[in-house]
Structure formats: structure tokens, C-alpha cells
Image 1 (cartoon, rainbow, N blue to C red):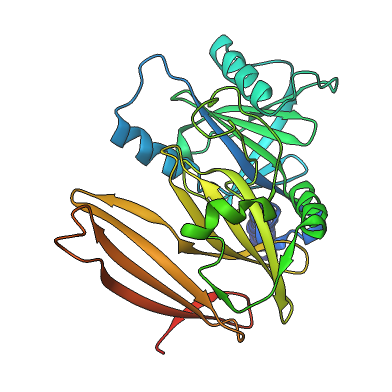
Image 2 (image 1 turned 30 degrees about the vertical axis):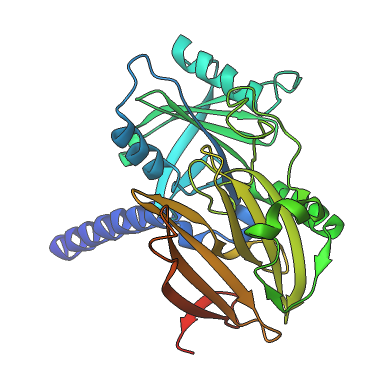
Length: 336
């Protein structure tokens, strides 16, 4: 009888431990959280002010790594890249003087220095291995800030706020219809750019002079822009089925202009981005593009090699690529 009871208690003990472990795994599994439990954050800014600057190539690689970070939160948890959960707890101000300096720079850039809301500071219970983060997190108003051990501060904004702002902007944008034959690009871009309206009116004091009007765009990473994109201006096309479409004009630090086609869902989530107008420098000239969107929203992009000595060597067609918009709003490459 005692043997049977002993076996029962041993079995019960192991079952209890298994249930406890399972419950903890469920608690820390983002797939078990409902959408109502989860808050989505959108990266809006990366600030890098090191004492010893990295070489250009290393810096570009590092910034491209951190710009792909995905952040969500739920109660006292931070979810990185959909499946890495970090428990956090609120503390008093725990930032180092260097982190305070970085944070102040970002607050100036985001025009939050006059914000009266009390800063909330958090510590990571377990330090994540991703992105070389240090264990500090700060919440201010609708923004969340993460810090790395190599003098980078990442600023995020409530994604719902971003979508609400974009919805308001979208209603005010000028609208055009297809077909479009390279309109608002190339020779047309300067003479017709007034029809584009700015996505934001913020001015970045740290890049004043790098862009034509020193503008700073919180929507850069929302639109999956390049590291040096800025000065977003937009124009909307008539919707394709239930897909909202934007022509998005942007300017790089080297003053090169880009034109992109953006697809959005009904609730203003980004679906896809297609570069339809861009230039790139070569040693003996450059590559530039022309686009055409027909009445059925089929997109053709032609890339040309334009040599500096064009009188001796004519401009030549390099490639011609065709795209359609699928039911999900993605731009899909097709054969003509």
C-alpha cells in the first residue's frame, strides 16, 4: 500500500512540475496573447552619437541591423521580433549619463522636450541577446525608447497613432487617376511637385542643410525607407479594388530623388513598397528609370544606362520589368 502511495505522490509531483513549466511557457508565448493584449510599436528614429565613431561601412551595417527590429509589448513584457519575450519591471530613473544625453537629443528631434508627462523607466528582468541592447527602457507619452551598448538609441511610437495620423493625411492628399506615364518623375518632378503634399512638417535640427528643408520624417521606417530617406511628399492614386495606393516622393542626403509606389490596407497598415523612380551613380554615368502604370494598374519599369559622354555612347535600355498588384496588395513581378 505504501509503495502505491509513494508512486502516486511521485507521479503527482512530476505532473505538477510539468504543468507549472507548461503554464510558464504559455505565459511567455506571444502566440497565446490576443490582439487586444498586444501593443504594436513602430520604429521612428535611430540616433547614433558615439565617442569613437565606427567606420562608414561598419556603421551602415549596424544601423541596417537595428532598423529591422520589431517591437510589441503586453503588460510587463516586451516582444522582440515576434517571438523573443523579455520580462520588464518599472524602476526609478536608471539611465546612465550617456543614455540621458542620447535621450535628450532624440526628444529634441521628436519635439518632445516640452512634454509634461512623467517619464517611466523600466529594467529588463532578463537581458536579451538580440541587437546588443542594454537593460533600460523608457516610456514617454506615445513613445518607447531602447538603448544599445554601442551608443545607439531607438525611438518607437505607438503604431496605432501612426496609422491614425496617416489616415488623416491620406484624406487631404491630392488624387490622380491612371494611366500614368512617368508623370511626377524625371523631367516632370520639379515642375509638378507642388501637387505632392508633405507627410510631416517636422524639422530635424541635426540634419539641417542635408535635405532641402531639413525635414525629419517619423514615417521613414513605417514606409520601409532607406537609411538616408527624408522629405516625404505624397499623392494618392484611385484605390485598386480595396488597396489604397500612394505615390511617395523622397529625397536622399545626396539630394537624389526617389519615387515609390506604396500599397496600404483599409486600416492603413503598410502592405508593400515598389521603387518606380530612382537614380544611381556609376563611374562613367548613371542608371535612371522610367515607369508606366496602365489603366489596369499593371506597372512597367524601364532602367536605362546614361553615360556622361552620351554624344559618343547613346543611352541604352538595361532592363524592363513588369508588375501586377495581387489580391493582398503586393507588387508581383510577372512576364509580359
